[in-house]
Length: 312
Ligand code: ZN
Image (cartoon, rainbow, N blue to C red; front, side, top):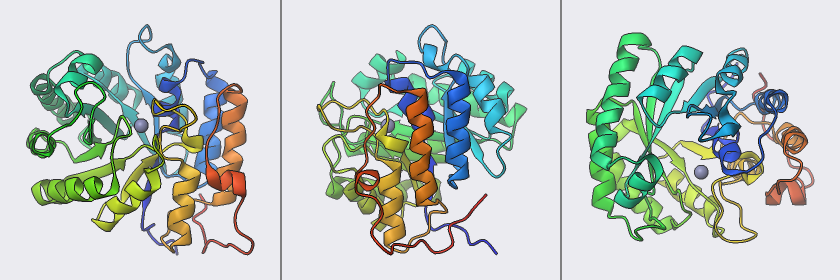
């Protein structure tokens, strides 16, 4: 009998990763990479972003990638949608879950989606209405970006983050998570802000999307775990996440995150040797991108075993 994992690792490399790099991964390579991630036991993957191809040519094959991912058993197929048009396309493609970025920083919101925060909440409401009408089984998540600080405006008021979380839940979303888009969070801040958001929206609190820009990624994940977060976004090889510091990875590295939780005895359902093997599929599709991760560098400790990883 398969136990439910204690932690859900939501792999964002095929979306967050690929949209942050200049090179475009050929579709056939994307599909093989998805197969490898799925074979490692990942059961939620953000596979694409539904944005106009002229803005992000890396995502021009989003519908095709979704179609392939839908054939992988037990996988929750997620896509990022910045607006109603994207949501329409993602629902047409048949995704199981939509994630909508809503910036807590007023400046980042205008720069990223050319909308005010209030306009974005209204857009979220329209996307939920579309979901209700066309695909009521689809989960809608909001990721509150720049929740821990913003390179454009500096500090972001925690009150703004908590209010936005309440507003998007009132707009009908199933989950609202917090994203450290620019890699500015620290563990004390992560603990405080997730605690406040949970007090406000309870079980609708969604994923922690944390970055490793300054080396605090895992510490921040653990802080979020301590205050009840059970879903974590991360990226194989730390791909993407707009790293600002030279030599620093952006997104939290999936391999290191899985190793941390598994070493603590918290089941992720992910098989570490197979996860590390999935790096070959990523490297084949993006030969010039640096891949990060301390666990793949060091290898697993001698005698390290995972208790019955969940195989597909
Ligand atoms: Zn990210």
